[in-house]
Length: 344
Image 1: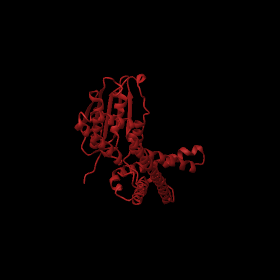
Image 2: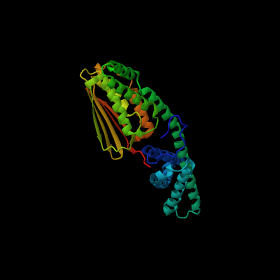
Image 3: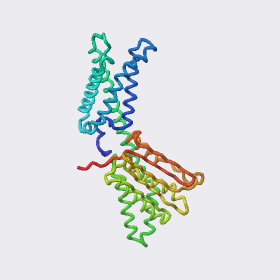
Image 4: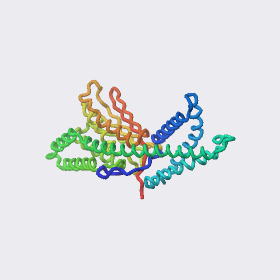
């Protein structure tokens, strides 16, 4: 976890336990194998045979490498980038040679005089594929780190909407004489909310911190809306060390208040569910709303779009976002990998 005020992120090996990384490795490796088959073939009819010869060795090497890299990920995380890249390349070469000689006649036809030539050729191919993939993930990490920092800075600035600031100040002014202690408490909550939103620039923050900030936000909105705004928190099986991206929950609640509860004369209840399902963290926010045709402000969906983009940058395909609007309700469901804060 780094601050956007620091230098760009240092090079790091890809997370071999990430599903998106695994899929990209499989697709890229098979694509390079197809390219090699095309270069070796004598014609179109010869391409399938060449591809089959390459794949018979590529598939076991690839699957074994992915499995061992998945196991070795914690150890690789502690290495400098170039040492980690060397370790990955060495592992791939060792597996290539081991599987090649273990395969016997499958890779070494009888009567073939120079068996070691093929071994060297396959080792070079493995090194080239490994180098291309590591270079790709390194460049992708650099590009996404800059994009993530820009997106985070943008969302930190955009989340504090002018209407929320003005409404809160007006609500405090309305009770400053009649209820000075409540007005003072509201100003303290508003200061804490703004301070956390504008100063915490880490990729992941404790879930309890997000819940606290969201409750302070709801308290400020209830000061303005009174009994029209009700909230039901359902927190299940969430350890204190759980981590989520910053400013993930509060924008969902702000969207529920501004577009759902506020236009309803009678108000309504926001249901919030936070639950751990094995290796995943589930976040649900549901609120009543007026029919879409009668909505006074459709909104520009900037908050929800920012959330989708940040989830994609942080978790790739392992995070899921689903929004559903019914005739009288709006439902948002986010599923992301469960992670815990490391304790020393």
